[in-house]
Image (tube, rainbow, N blue to C red; front, top):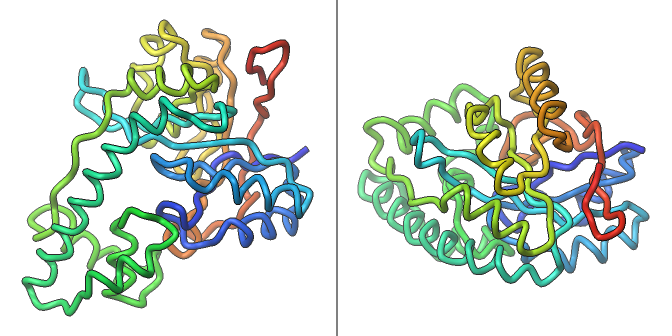
Amino acid sequence: MKADLHVHSHYSDGSDSVEELIKQAVKANVTHMSIVDHDTVAGWPEVEEMGELYGVEVIPGVEISAYDYKRNRKVHVLGYLYRRDAPHIKELCTPLLQRRQKNSLWQIEQIRSIGYPLDRGEILETAKPSQTIYKQHIMRHITNKPYSSDDYRHLYRSLFKGDGVANRDITYVDVYDAVEAIILDGGIAVVAHPGQLNSYELIPELVKIGLGGIELTHPDHTKADHQRVIELAKQYDLLMTGGTDYHGKFGIEIDVGDLTSPEIPFVHNGRVRG
């Protein structure tokens, strides 16, 4: 078995369609995949359909953009194997998506004010089927340079970071609420790329409310991160997951299946296990 449990589609901030992702999985001999779009489960019906069509085992997934208010830092929470209608996840994430959309529209106007000829309607259209505009969608209308190029990164930082005219963030959901929503929907909550966002101190606290896993394999993780994740997983009996964090043209140069998950979540006797 070969699993990539961290993939993004054009239902959020990935550039590729669900079918394109599934085809890539087949080509890479990936047997299990989870498309974990940010703060939305809207793509699941198509994911399930394409998985059946191409013979890939697809696992319901989501990545919730949360915040550790105790330490004042972002933390992402992956959710797997939740019930298909996901009422608690939707209730938590819908206002978050609305805040992100409002902020993105503001960012477009700010960037227009310094001379970039952005058309809001065009950006809305090219972002579909995502109903939310992300920075990647805006950048697509500003430059043709590849995401990983120095030119792209310099332009991105000049607009969205530091003194950039579009440097404004949104209010994220509390990480405890994110974990709780996933659990209430019958899923397993996993802290995503703890090495990237320095989420390690949070792990023992989240275990107390039902955290089920921690992401081991990720492009940003070092050998030291791997060791730390393994130690925490053993200490708290956590599932270890992983994947490429693939975003297509909107992310780093990596292919579906280049990084794989050491464990695959499944349901046994009503409980999610690895």
